[in-house]
Image (tube, rainbow, N blue to C red):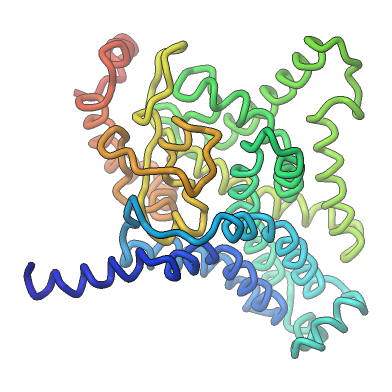
Amino acid sequence: MTETARPRAAIRNLLATRWANTIRYSLMNLFIIAGAITLALGGWWMWAGLFLSFLIAGFFEELIGDAGDDEKLPATWYLNLMLFMTWPLLVMLTIVCLNSIGPGLDMVDGALKFLGFDPAAAREKTNIFTASGGLVSLGMFYGLAGVNVAHELVHRTRSKFSMILGRWLLAFTWDTGFAIEHVYGHHRHVGTPRDPATAKRGEIIWLFIIRSTIGQIKSAIAFENARLQRRNMANNIFTNVYWRGQLMSVAVILLYVSMVGPIGILLSAFSAMVGKIYLEAVNYIEHYGLVRIEGEPIEERHSWDSHRRISTGMTYNLPLHSSHHRFATRPFWKLQHAHGKAPVLPMGYMPMIFCAAWPPYWKKISEPLLKEWDENLASPRERQYLAETGELRA
């Protein structure tokens, strides 16, 4: 081992320890708490959540690099606790943000003063522009934390508590239908033309976000209607899971309205939109350009992986996406690297989303990746399909 390799190996071994991974899988909740502090300060601080999202998950993780495949993890109860803490933390975050934007509530003001903040000064420093920063930051937290944890929980179909909590987390982005379509639609049709959440080759991300959103809503409604019909059940707001989920979103809207008045409807819609855009941007890079023949098994090669240490910790191993699709019911701490069976993104999720936002640059970096997939991972029938549709990169 060279002189320069020894320190690097020592750092890797240190980061693989149980205590280091305890911090790693606490990062998202620590991030939410840090966001609450910045929102409580008001003014320009309200843009900090967005800035930190890009800085931590976009820049620092490229410096730190990848996590290993077999590292010592904290106890299962602790990992579950981190998941279950997300919803109350997001409720707290929302209340703090709206208290800095709106007229404020005496109870919230009292709690903030007890913690050393000056809510009146925060409101005085907050104008339309800085309030917009707070709502954008709030939306990023809804997407990064809320939707991501919900994704983990709604797959626990044997736990009613987990599924309900997952839907309450999705209510922040007005997207509780995701719990239906993602589990029963996306995981069945991924990589095929029937999956609205699989981005097609050459599809621009901004058009994909619209198509995927509409397609998933239609799919969720159709699936739930079909479920009720199969069971010979009445189809109404009390029996239909999709429409009951909309009531959860209404509860979020009422929280906004109770703190800032009727304009809270628009503010909630804005933050929900930011979170939804982030979700769909992640969907875009997770399966971009990959194809699967309908009816054939879902394999590791049908998802893009990323092994970056920070983002796998903050998003509870979501970037180990091929393992998730191969073994959808496994909890996040049991997901593994695919060891050459899946395509790997050259950067973490946030940098890849940045690249996708600029279509000419996205094409420059994605075309070689698709060519490599076609040559080395695609099955003969998948290559034949791509050749017939004129999309084979060879």
